Image (cartoon, rainbow, N blue to C red; front, side, top):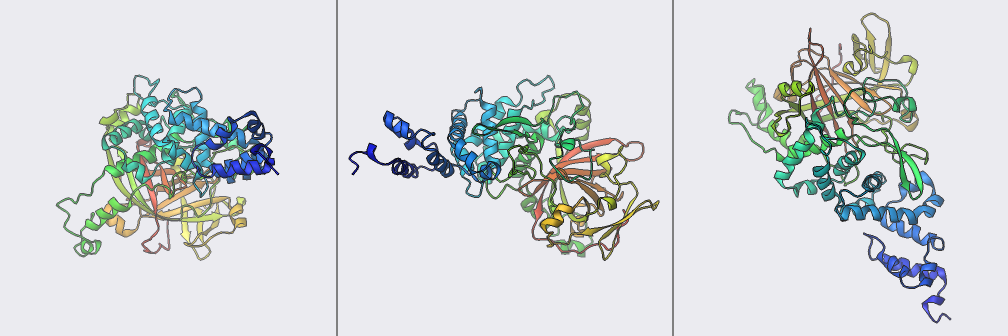
Amino acid sequence: MATTILDIPPEVFQKIILYATLGSPLGPPKELFSCLLTCHTFRHRLAPDHASELYSTIFSQKFDVRGPLFRLGEAVVRENAPLEMRRRFSAIQVFKERALDHPCLTEALWIAYLMVEDSDTSQKNVKQLLRAGVPAFLDMFLRAKLYVGSDDGGWPVLTEATTLALALSWTLASQRVLSDEDPLLRRQMMTLLKPIVYASFRYSIFYTPEDVFSFSNDSRDSTFLNQKHDTSSFPPSMFPPSEIGYFGSVKCKAHPPSAAQFATLLYFTRMESLASLTIPPHIICKTRAQANELSITGPCVDDIKHFQEQCRTRFADFPGFDVGIQSPSKAASSGSTLCQPASYKPGTLSGEWQGSVLIPCIASFDSWSRGMGFPGEDLIDTRFPLYIKLEEHVCYDAQAVVPIGDKEHGAKGAWLPDDLIASETDEGMEFSDSQGTFHTTYETLRRGATLSHDQLEKVVDVIITGKTDEQYVAAWGGYTKILGRVRMQDGLMVLMQTDSRDMVVQGTSVLRGYVTSSQNLVGRLAVYGTGAERGVSFEGVFSLNRNHTGTGNGKEKQQQI
């Protein structure tokens, strides 16, 4: 019979320690630490070499483990759990102490970002970060460090640390966090973010040059991922994959996120929260039906309310569930590159999208794109509503795809031939050109239809057609004909206006962007001049959310693009 606690069998002793830690699921296992300091015998019995199962179990109580288990396997996770637990709580301590200049800060930010990537439905990882006040730390860090090393023009300086901080600021954001932000501080943060949001020539939103296109659908294609992104004289805004500590002593390559994408999401949510519902006095019609009856174009009261209340950037259902563009975070190999964009999943873009476009003052855009300093808080921007309905058409045969367009036009032509003709048939969407050099039919993904896993794997190309529904055209203007294509490797979508009579803004509009995991379609709008002015006239940014209700206005049977 046991006479003291030291005589208890090791497995029973470890269970006692385990039960003691159950009372504090958040924060470090202080009960375990206290026992380790009790005496030499306790320390020996509770050493990781003698109690690996205990550490693994405590780790799974404190953090989400499905991602590491899937990627590394149970044996590796159990072996590395003690070290990884120390790494995570050391990183959390950096955040709690508000140590902005800590020598291991970049590593701590990577640890936090990978915790978000591996977040599961239990939200254990995110709860640990929120308990440590990480959102407040990130806000403090960005205000203090985003412009350190800035040149005379006042441009933000992106590093791995500031890029990760921007990404984490969004992934840990929520409506509650935003509501607690002081309006003055909110405006100040918007001013800090503006250059990254608007200066597309300096801060790219694309993981690979936007003009690059091929029919490979493998996001792990090294030829695609390793192409040099920025040939300009500006400091880099996208960073190549680097080797980092992933789990315990296991190292992996990881791709830093897109700072511009997350800055745009952060900017839009703040801008939308500051916008107030104001009905101009000249608006006399309450409903669209009344306006139609009186042959009045322009918004009615209901249109303005819908725009204000529904056309907003959405947070993820739970903090931590939006890691930017869809990422293959559950890659099944420790040799995989983490946090890189996943290949496009057909059907992602199908449906109705609503939101807004922000366009900076054209004169300001022209001046600072020519090398002058950014105007900061003096920059004037204009917000436009944007409603689009998109339909996807897929091809399974690499020999039957629509040819890639002129390389000179690249993404501004949606990687499509200039004279593409699209006609809807019973079999799907038929594509050809005016010279008759090709003729092919793509299968149309109907609303509500789903593809099997095998079908998804076989898709080699996705072409998009779309329009703005008539009720929104009557209220705000829009696009009667949209044509686009998706880059399968990373999900980059390019949509272009194909009817010169659509003048939401003067020129030819091209939207390029990604769907995030919180179902925001975010990116940049380029407006190209016509005639002799063929270059970019100016650029803006857009953020759309998916409209789940739908308007059901039907489809055009014939389209000449």
